[in-house]
Length: 354
Image 1 (tube, rainbow, N blue to C red):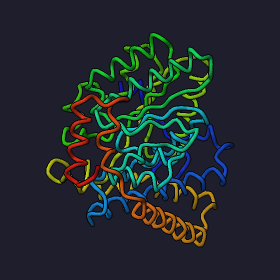
Image 2: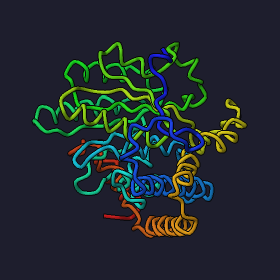
Image 3: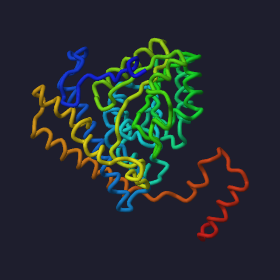
Image 4: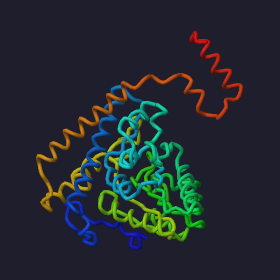
């Protein structure tokens, strides 16, 4: 099956061309835009980990190493499309329009962190595994019924493919020819469970065969491969040619969350070596140098500018007005049933409020 679903790649680990099909479209402008978004997300991610260690936000879910998968795919989506992230896809959501302040507020435990900018169809991060695949399929089907050309993209890890929602989502999307892109980031581990214990199939992309849909396997650390092949899937969806299952083979350096210790189940030496070989940002930097697109001053100025942007977002997050305790009670039902209303009044009374 690995021969039937090879990892598609445009540039290799050394930044050299492996497939020149899209050479004419890979301009310096596009390359620098991708590099900027990837560096921005990495600096954000490192700041998120630091903030959690300092006790300034709650448990944080890092993604360093998966920037190419998330940003390349998000860049392929268009205005009006739908995005359904997991709790780890903040690089994708910031690329699609979420502000850094909003993302930090989410990790601060604030409801405002789930609200996208006006006109952006970004669902709140899904914490239950694979539930968002059904939401994405439903939204895509609704757009089809309305006669639009909008598509949806949904992110999930390798562990989600063991959930019933994964199979139900793919089956429904296949039967109703829904314009949805199922984007799997195969990190090789579902928390502590390696993929060989998760499934017997050699690839995730091959699971598309059972549902008569397009299946694509990518080098998830090659941002060009992710961008162009996801764009193709989106174009197919818009033309009514149905869903696509994309497997982006990648590697996350850090823990599953800041509450996890990956050294207990994963050889961390591999992460160290991958930083020098398969790292998506280093690969793009090597490509830019090979193509005479790299400018040292531009890169230093960019890092300084992005760092300032992130620090400003942290300041905004920390200066946001404190939430009201009623938020705990008022966002479950349209109208509170009497037990919740009673608890709400009792809590207000305990605080001396009337």
